[in-house]
Length: 296
Image (cartoon, rainbow, N blue to C red):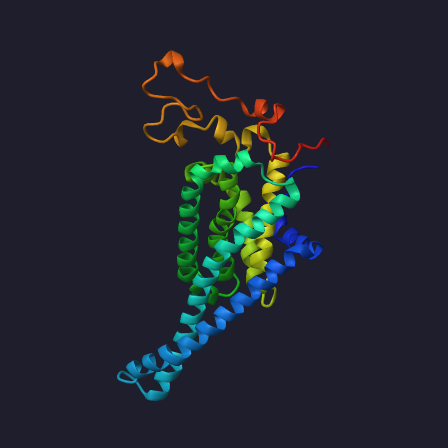
């Protein structure tokens, strides 16, 4: 087998959910909570914000026009509010669902890998929140593009797809112990793959009724993609290679030997040996949580 095309994974996520009933409880809980939040948000804005906006607008125009404009403005505010809340909600559920698929496909995450990722967890959480907030801002900013038939919708999907796919792999980079810069470098090196994944993922989220489950299935698809990267990605192009021999551009200022723990008070002769190559890591099974590399 080989690494599949990136754009196929959002579709595979849908079929994976259908074949694995154990994941349905996450979907049901998520849907019920999101429906409850949507109802509460809509009621609060319509009861309190809508009349206030209408009253303010009546000072500048006819009352009936003010009520119509206020109604559509309130609907837009409801949409934006639900989008922000759903993005924050998905931030929590993404880890839960991603880990469930990861355990199923890789037979668990070894304790050493979890321990190694602790030092970068704060960085990954921060980067994920930044990506989520940036994506919400980008969605609001690019929403008017949908008013342009066909071309505008395509531009909207294309612009948002790349950052959407990146945000879905933050958990994967966290599990590997990558920093934000290392994850960013890997995503940029595979920009076309992440763009293709994101285009399909955003498109699925725009389909009525189907978009009730696609935020979950896209996370599942991103986890399946990560598992296949673990199995089939070439060693030199694998994200784990950044843990062993990152490019000089990724070395933070003041950090001398990347991947080697060195006490600055010790002489150079006492420095630890350089980190192993990726091929050595694979042959010696230094990361046992990674699935075996199946022979064709």
